[in-house]
Length: 528
Image (cartoon, rainbow, N blue to C red; front, side, top):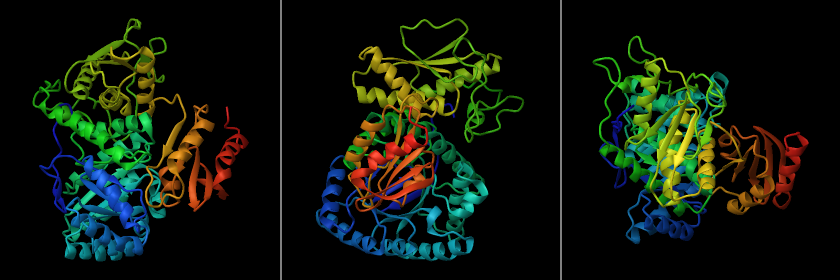
């Protein structure tokens, strides 16, 4: 897509909040309190609502937790709050059925709801009938790394596997004429998340579906890194018009997620007001036909395949281009001759950049591209989010060889650090330790924020590693799918350590676990 246009989707009513269709992009979050603790759930819900949260999700790992959502809802309604509640269910269809009786929406993970096609057909059809009866919407939430064994065997841990896992359930929804469905695809790897969402959108179109989409980069982490990573992944898709509701998953207090999500949405809303960019394709065609996985205009190559990664082919000029890792340039740097510097000065920076790169390709120009964008803001958080959205999208798709941010209000050191963080968030270049940490929920078995700080203190020098820090065993091993090492809550006060997807040590006392993690990394020769 070149010019911004919101994807047309069906409308799903979740209580008093509409998702998709003509509704605005909704922002939501998730409680990290125990769902059986009504008072704590209500108090945190109130804090979320106060900062603008429109939909609130709760952990319902069992029937007991699912049943207590009714009490949480009752107290909130008595206090005058109508914000819809969503039950988050893994492995337990009975919990999903219980929650459907009480609250406005239930999220299920197709990777662990049921395995065989026969079991899926039976359990899911019964669940849909119950949701129909009670006016309950559902969310089919696919997670990278938690596909069922049948999908893993056939597709591996791939976007194709995630897509097919989702489509199996959507086909049943269509057959049962159940339309109150929202879809989400979550991954800590922004590139996989973006590619899979694009693929699901295409597959839905091919099969006559247009369900709304929830976007999020799961296990994004905390602080500036978590915000930039979320902005790159969510922002890439929103700028393409894809996405109807979002969550920024931070390893922080949930209420800190909402201002970030709202800032992203507000920025995207301005794209609808951007002047139209003139197409460069063949007469009678549209540039939008040549991006995001399409076959392009007859006789012309597509700009990129949005469903699989490849770098734009360029000739190397010194250390820039030719397949080398993207570089960071500062406004004061003198670029070597032979570099295409694209100065992004249009309100629709993504569209302008894609259009200019198309023109270079059409002219046979295969020299490296450095993208330059100037920002006048004096707000650091705003700069981080906007530059991550507007520039990160090009590196997600392998279209550029360098990044140059100009922001006079900030130092060269700040800009350089930000630029490298954007490249890392887009999976284009790793220059520091990456922490894949969950945002915490009612299943979390230790103080997540305190633990993240301890692990960072011990391991931040290991700039080549990806380390997962996960609150519980339910999502942990799956959602840290591409981490080198993992620290996962196994039980109250107990931690399990992973190398890749393999559990190496189980049930280590929490007070020993951080040091044991360091020892594990060293024992495998990965400590540098």
